[in-house]
Each structure stands twice: as structure tokens, then as C-alpha cells.
Image 1: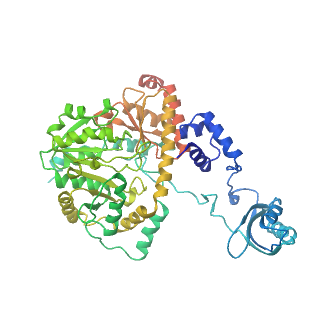
Image 2: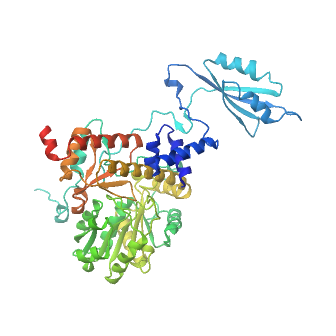
Image 3: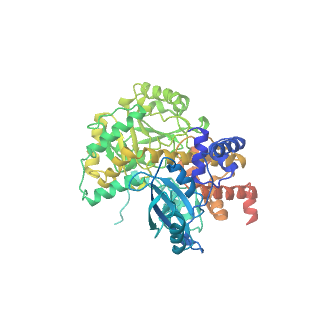
Length: 162
Length: 391
């Protein structure tokens, strides 16, 4: 694996590793790590770093919904134009153009179901190109960003083994 | 009447790690660097295959040698090491490499034969040879970066041995052998008509170069039994599945014992293994990459502590020199003072007397915490005397 791919793999595992720690893990100089991370950010490969939060363990409530959107296009408006408009709303955590029965899959979150509903009905549904919305509230999250939200596997290996 | 163990069993003492296991078990909040198995679980699809097989009621014996489909998959997989074996008569699937090792000894070693064993080495090697009444000849590797050399074999008297038992990548040192290093060993085996038992269970966990099997070298196939399995690369230790490959006469002899003792390896595990070989290469790569990162961290941290540490390139072990003269005393004190467990090198033979086996089969956070504790301990107590004076 080249050093760029290796450093990216380490960041994907845990973005909180320090430059020193990444350097130790990858056998690279710290200056190399800094420069590669800078490049990854400058090139738009790494777009940001955020915590993966299990809201069920947080004191603050958070409601998330997966919203299916169907849209209609015309000569003046393409998918990108519609997406550019929708991504500007802060409650929209993610927006993807998808294949299948609907066009966009949006992830919307707010502090209550009412807030999510109001946002979808007041802001998203009225967009002229949006022809239909279907909102699925998230009841429980089991895995997010590759991290499972279970209780974790206890290490039941023997403390010393051959 | 008192039932006495047989003389052969009596010659084998309890494993050197047993006492440390008992010591470690008494300690709370222990971070163990003494574990000789992966901290990952088997890839999910392999586990799912095992579950599916159970749901479909596949709980009967398989062919003695193992399912034909599995043997074919093993044969295909071994091609990556330039090894070609016939699934029908050159492969036997066993209950872990441990059984394969036992079968090799029982089927191919007579009482009074001499088994030359790489030293230091996995705790079972000497015991297996002793159980069949063989004489054990240890071949020191400590002065040769823990690899076998022609001169060390000659000096140890291995020319008169019947079997050479080796394991690379090595447990406990993490040493690997390159083709250039293996060639003179192979030549020695050919010249002196040695049978080679080559334990390659850690083959997938080789860092910086490709694993080379001694059986792939010219003239070695007919005299080598390669032992391998699914425990390490696929994190399937508890499923107990290994295999041996070698010339038909040898495998037939091993299978004869196998069919009268184990009958066949666990059926559920065989289904998991087929799936593992079929579709889990990416998971193996991911695990290997993570081990490699940890290996670098461990080596780097020991450098920072000014502790000489062998530059291991395989398995998931580092083999630093003990900061104290007595590695057992150091390991005991480290458990007591900092709740970190390492295995004293003495458990693996005389060649490990000055070292400690450090397993990095633990998550990065725990590994770093353990190494911080070791650093703190070594700074506070550079000698055993300093530790005793503080008590």
C-alpha cells in the first residue's frame, strides 16, 4: 500500500490519531504525514472529520429521518441544480442521488419529529422540482459510518496463551 | 493403586506459560500482551457460512481427510506460495495445526529418532517430539537474528537428526525467513536426508516481503510436510481447523491415525473455512494491515525506551530483550506493578532466556496504554534491585 493510501486507511479507522501516532503506525516521517494529510484535504479526498455519535447515549435528543425525494427536471434544471439548493439547509446531513424508485436520498435530523416534519413539509416539499417526498423516521441505529452500536464484544480470550 | 502418567508424558513438564497465566488471572484491569491469538473475530461471511451449515443440519462427519471442496480450495490457495498439491491424496484437514503437528510426529517419527527444533520456538514443538519418544535437538537461532542458518544447524549436530521442525513466521520472535535464507537450510536438509516439518500457520502475516515456503524450493517437496490452518489469518482459533500437505505416503500415514482418533475435523468449521478461502481475502488484508501498524508502533516505542527489540517481520509478536537480567522476574514485577502481561522468553526454550514475547494482537488504544505503562515501569525500575529496594 502506498503511503497516501495507508495514511487514508489510518484516518478512516480513527481520525483522532495525532500526526506522531500516524507516523509511528505507517513508518513515515511526521513531516510526510502532515504533507500527505494536507494533500488529501486539498485534493478534496478528505472532506472533514466528525465524531460518530450514538444519540441514544447522549443527553440531547436527536431525531433522524431518511427522506426519499422524487424530482422533475427540465431544460434549465438538472440534478446538480436541485441538489445545490437542498444541501444548503442545515438539517440535511447527507444528500445522495440514487438509482431505483426515487431520485434523491436525504438524511435529515433535528431535535424532534415535529421539527423534522415541519422542515420537510415547509422547506423541501415546496421546492418546485420536488414532486414527492416519503419520510422514514429512524427508530434505532445499529451501525453508522462502519461503527456498530452494539454493546461491544467482550474479549474473552485467555490472558496468556501460547 | 495409583495411576501414573506414562514415562513420555512425565518427561514433558507443564507449559512455561502456565504459571504466568495463573499469575495474570489474579490481576484486575490487566492489559495482556501475552495473547497468542487474533483479537479480531472471524470474517462475518465465514461465520455466516458456519451458521448456515448448522441451520441446514450439516452436522455429520465429513470424509476423513476433510470435505473434498475444502481440500480443493486449500490446494488452490497454496498456489500463491508456489505449492501444488493434489486434493485427493496430498492433503489432510485436521483439528487445528496442533493436531497436524501431532499427526506428523506420530506418523513419521519413531522412538529414538532425533527431531531438531528451532530454538526459541512455539511451546508445543518440543512436547510433541517428546510424546512420541524422540530425542530433541535444539538449534539455537539467537545469534542469527532468530533464523536458521547452515552453520547453526551444523554446530548443533542437526546433520544426524531425522526431522527438522521449524516455524516461520516464528512464534515467539516474529522472525521470518526469506528465500535466500531458506535455500541453505533446504540444501542442508537434502544433503543430510532430513524430513522437514514446516509450521506456516502465520504465513499470511508476513510484513515487508512475501512468505516463502521451504517446500517450494527445489528438491524439498518430497521431504517436507507443510502445516497450516485458519486460526491466525482468518481469526478462527476456536473453530480448530488446520491442515497438512505433503507427499501421498506421508499424508496417508497421518490420515490413518487421524481416522482412528479424530475421524474428521469439525464439520461446521470446514464450511466456515471454505467460505473463508472463497471470499475473505479482503478481511485478511485488513487485519494484516492493522497488525503491521501495531508492529511499527511497538518497535518504535521500544526504540524510544532504549530497549533492544528484534525487528520482527511476521506473526503478531515482538521480541524485545528483557530490561532486567531475569526476564521472568521482570514479567512478574510488570504484572504486579503496572498490570501489563508479557510472556517471558524462557517459556519458548533456552534461546528465549533474555527476551519477552509481546503480542500486539490487541487494539491500538490498549497497546499504547500498555506501552506507556511499560515505559513508566522501566524508568522507575531499571533493574530488579531497584524494584526490590522499593518494595
